[in-house]
Structures are given as C-alpha cells and as structure tokens.
Length: 401
Ligand SMILES: [Fe+2]
Ligand SMILES: [Fe+2]
Image 1 (tube, rainbow, N blue to C red):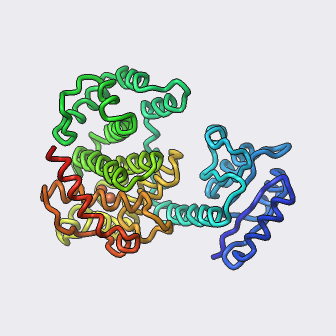
Image 2 (image 1 turned 90 degrees about the horizontal axis):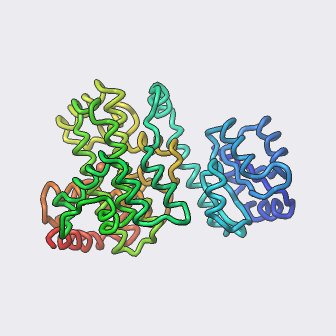
Image 3 (image 1 turned 180 degrees about the vertical axis):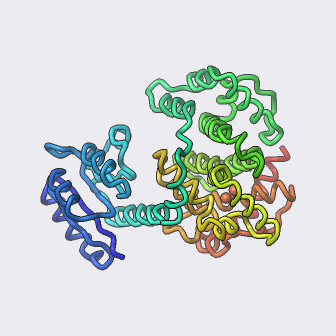
C-alpha cells in the first residue's frame, strides 16, 4: 500500500521545491504539502497519514508544538523534523517528540532513505500480532532512572569522568555490581578496580554507562522469570556482546555515535526474552521445550508460538522509551539483518555477528571455525565475509593478553 506523507513548511517555495524533486516517487507515496501547522492539523483531521515531515521555525505554531500534538493524537505516525536551523543538538533537546532530524538543505536521497527506513520499522512494530500480544500487558518496564541521570549529566556542559563516577558512586548497590562485572575475568583488567571513578577512567564513559543501563534493566526481572530462563546468563551474554561490538566497531573505524548506540543495542538486544518469559510464562516454557526438542534457535520457536520474536518485543519497548531509531532497528533485525532496508553495515548487522561470535567464544573458546546462523549472503553483499576471521583473531588475541 502507498505510504501517505504530509510535508509542512511555512515557506511555499520550499514546499514547491520538495514537490518537484519528489515527484518521481508518486508511484510509492501519496504526498500532501501543507503551509503551516494549523493547515497541517486541519488536514490530519480529515485524512490519515503515515509520516509527517515538518519545518521547525514557523510563525504561529512551530514544529515542536505541531509534533507534540501529532504525537498525542496520532501516535502511530512517523515524525520527522526537516529544519533549516543547523544546531541539531539544540533541536534534539527541544523536540522530544520527533523520531528523526534532518537539516536543510537535505539531500533528496537522504530524505527518501530516512522516510523509507522509518516506515519499515514502524510497519514491523505496528504488526497486529505484536500489538495484540503487548496490548494485553498492563505495564512495560520504564526507562531506568540512574541511566537517565547519567545521560542528563552527559548532556550538560560540565560533564566529566569525575562527575559521572560520582553519580554512580551515590548508588552503593549499583557500584558493587559495576565493580563485580568489570573485575570479572572477561574484562581482563590489569589491576583490581576499586571504585566507580576508576572504572570510568579505565573503561571509558560509554562502556560504563552501557553497563549501568544493563544492570538497571536486568535487575528488574531477576525474581519473576528465574524459573524459566536465566536472567544472569542473558545479561552476561549481552555484556559480552557489547564488548565485542565495541572492538569490531574500532577495527572497522565506526564513528563514536554509531559505536555508542551499537553498544547500547547490544546490551539490550535480548531484553524481549525477559518480557515474554515474565508475562507469558507457560507459553515461554513451550518455547524452551521446542528449542530443546527441535534444536532450533530461540527466535524461531518464539515465532511459532507467539508469531513475534523477542527481537521485535525488545525493539517495541525501546521505541516507547524514545531511544534513537538506529538502536531500535539494530535490535529489531539482529537475527535477520538481510531483511533490513538500510544499505551499509548497520547496527543490526554488527549486532548479528557479534552475538554469534559471543556464542562461539563461550562454547568453543579459541575456535576460528565458521559458525551457524550467520546471514552469509548479507555479509557477502557488504564485502565483510572475509573480515570475520580477522575479527575472531583480534578478539582471541585480546582475550589472551
Ligand atoms: Fe543474543
Ligand atoms: Fe536474540
């Protein structure tokens, strides 16, 4: 079905320019162009749209106000800011209700890709089976508070290693868990780390903040689902996957923001398992039974029993938390990156390989064999298939040092 897209700007010339350059897409998109926020809202009352793309600075109602109303009234719509104001940070802080931010002048291809990607993610998360399953759950876990405080601190102008270390130190239970993790043999630290500040200095703010996020999220589940699956094992798998992701990202020269988001995605990638096991205990026991009897991966058994997988459930929750789209995409497609619409080595691909490497490293330490479950066609298409032995080698050396 054609996607319906509403473009909003106060300048008629900009709208005309968009209309002209996007004309070839009429086969795929129904596009409507509205002058100003009030006109956009009038249109929305009469017709439904899948996506809104709006300017920020407009007389009368500005883009932030418009998107807030759209978020409340039409929560399923994809909300994109296309703004001439280039201070992206400022816009991101002021417009909490946007999914994506683009700055003018925006390359046509980037605009098209952004809209298409957002639509495909939304389609996945709006799937009926997922809505029905999760609609029945009263409350979903909320965004962890200590992590939110760290993020707030990092957004302030005087954030530092010391200030982040201090925030963590205030929480004695958290500090103990962080220290227990970083002093485990897996991290191979050359000396014993005895306080949060030292952990932040030696491991970096990004890794420590990701660890805090994981500890907070996983601790919420520990009692209720313990009888079905091991929360500790899943947590451990996620921590190790995040560290592997960080190393591969470094080898592949990924930028800091992408690496950081990839680590967060890794830390939370199997969270959906816990949500399913907590709320649907009996069915999840059947999942585990099916995995053991048929020898199939967990996500395939979930698909048979729930018609959705933990990847989609986790992505859905993180969408509610308002985490960046690429984190949500990364989690949603971590078992089948080839199905993702993005072209490059995106988070889902990185996460896909890293979690398989983590399984291999745990089950057959030191092995450089090929492993099961890899989407080889996808890795081949990106020209990365022969990078995998190099990554295996690098991780191996690192563990032994
Ligand atoms: Fe996993
Ligand atoms: Fe998974």
